[in-house]
Length: 368
Image 1 (tube, rainbow, N blue to C red):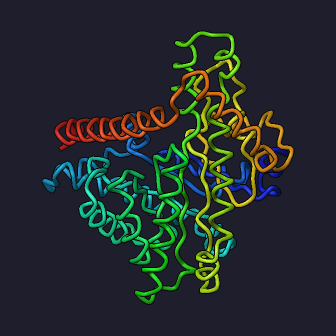
Image 2 (cartoon, one colour; image 1 turned 90 degrees about the vertical axis):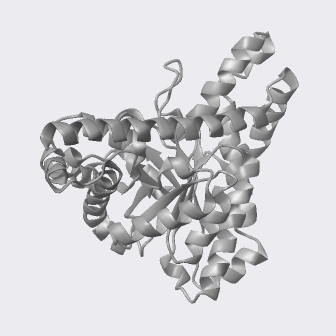
């Protein structure tokens, strides 16, 4: 295992893989990455499944059988994805047990078309939890306004949740409140709080991509100086908020009942601008009790040449706040940036879901 990946673990950060495919599972690649790259979890999304279905023939036999049985395309998607998630969960089960149920987690997202529908999101989450039937599953629910009460309700049922598409500090605060309310509801419902895990997926690189575009549009020397500083500053201040919430009396009451904190998860950590170092959203966001979910390229880059120097978050709160203040001074409305990114993120996941349905429909017709 590379020194950098060992150092991340020593600093208290878990490495999850932001990818899954039937081929990765059947070749043993996921199990290999657990050994060689310290991968302790897996996240998925509609884009990942769409890409997996497009490559090779790993799904063809199952799709053929769906066609023979006359399974609808919507149900076929659920069964295909649940099969992969169940397999990944079984592969990661030793990690789940060795870490006292903290890691070894696999995330499966609700239908993104339900992002603005609270009750249907809850119903879908319950259905996926039942369908996969693995204790180390996490259901991914977007942090839309409508998603917040769904997060609370689903946690209240004893279901572990990965909250996705978080961009702003304000929304992150609301997500943590929804988490605490969910655990309080779970306690009322008689669930064992120690068995409920949650992560809050705070997106990183997309913030720089959108902010940098606006800074370049402003074009002043001061604006140019601020390129590439928004995302890391935003994430560091999110961790500051995390520390505040999870030292509160409200949290301490839940912790006394066996609850474990909702961990910040750095998502969208693949660098989109080739001008930036390819490990910057890993090495600049190291903090205890966090997760970094990496696409394969970022994982490989970190293993190859990442330099981890311990906690790179908590000493940077003052500088991070100064960076966000400076962005406002040059005319970048970060609230508008994060609003746009949430709306765009929902649209992109819906588009990927529709693409997945379309691709599967063609395969059903072809292989039936």
